[in-house]
Length: 193
Image (cartoon, rainbow, N blue to C red):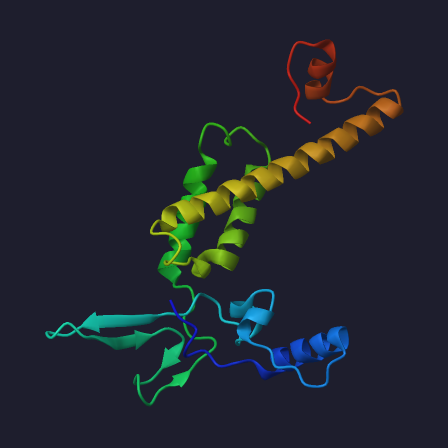
């Protein structure tokens, strides 16, 4: 994993330098990549997944570069491509299957808003799917499953909050709330808030 071949974004760098000058009231200030909050994303041009080099080891055990991410053309004479490396249709189908399978698990399949959970998980995967960092983990399946779990849980919490608001409004107007609230109030069931 390396940012060596990604060009520096001059606009972001100048904005950061101007902001730092205003804060410190210094005329000459040189910033390094460590002066930014997140150097990898603030100094360089924004890319859709972490950049990397592919190496191969020759017969005399010296590594040499055989490929670069975000690169078009030959390694020595090619050029940087910001949009290079899009999600393939096969990966998109895999994400869809993963969400579909996860939605049929016993703890998620009974909800009436299961479709919304799946669509939110697909949206999340399409946004972060290519951002898996191989230098931090060797298990992309766990990364994607965690993203799906978080999306499903987020939708569940939003729906619970909406149900609580609706039940509160019904009770204020002397109407019967949902069966879940009625069971919770009678003490025959537990209720999570």
